[in-house]
Amino acid sequence: MTTRITDLAQSRVVRSVILDAQNRMSDNQIKLSTLQKSQNYSGISENSNRLVGLETSNQRMEKFLEDNTFIKLRLDTMLNSINSMKSVLGDVRDILRDIDGEGVLTDGIDKDSTADVKISEIKDFLNVQINGRYLFAGSKTTTKPVVPGTLSNAPAFDSNFETKPEASFYYQGDETKSKARIAEGVVLNYGDTAADSAFEKLIRSVRILRSTDISGGDANFRSKITHALELANQAEDGLQAMEMNIGTKIQQLDTTNKNLETSKNFFQNIISEIEGVNTFEAVTELQQDQNMLEASFSTIVKLANMSLAKFI
Image 1 (cartoon, rainbow, N blue to C red):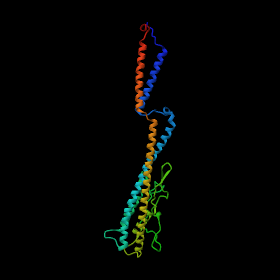
Image 2: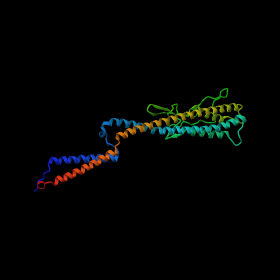
Image 3: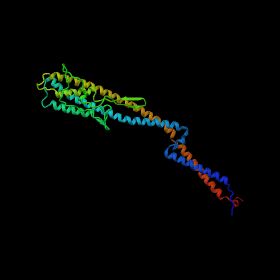
């Protein structure tokens, strides 16, 4: 029987070298496959607290951007409703001008049926919803804001044949205007309600058009129609102001989103620097460990084949 000269301690050292090389190779393979230095915070303990803070900030940026997408959709939808209301206003004002000027309507036009159609259009535009949320109802987002009363009932006229605001004729929401935090320390007040004076004046103008007898039964019909025309003109000014205001809010939101994107990219770059692996270094280390592993296996084989007889 031959006697090996391989020393037990030497064999253990070689095996330890092999085990270390295998572990390093496994780590580097994982790094190359995931492109991350470590799969847990302990692997980058010197930067773990910093990384957690950066990831939290990055998540907040992403949440703001996600929420702001819905706010932008609401603003765009509200702007579309206002533009549509301007079209309705133009139709109503054309009829009022004809009556105020000539005292009669163009053949084929029925003011009552036209008024009914226009109030229905106004109702649809102001009862618009996004994801089940009524946009013009204030904080009562699940309540349909516009439910008009009987259109043929005229608003109360004073001695000058003028009327007072009467949003209660149709409005079911409240006075709370929507607002949202669109970034850290930035609150956007963006909501308008259907009770806004521009909407109310347009609806009141349609009520006067619908309820006023222009066939000769009301001697004061011209004064009433003149007042309705004044309301329509004031409503147009109000709608234009609302349109400009919403446009400003959209611009503010877009600017905020660009800043959020910039911050998000900044955080992501730093996170990538902390987490990301240098592929060149990882490949080099992997190759070195492979070479070391091959040399270690070769040494074990040589030691295993050595005997006292061969040594002599």
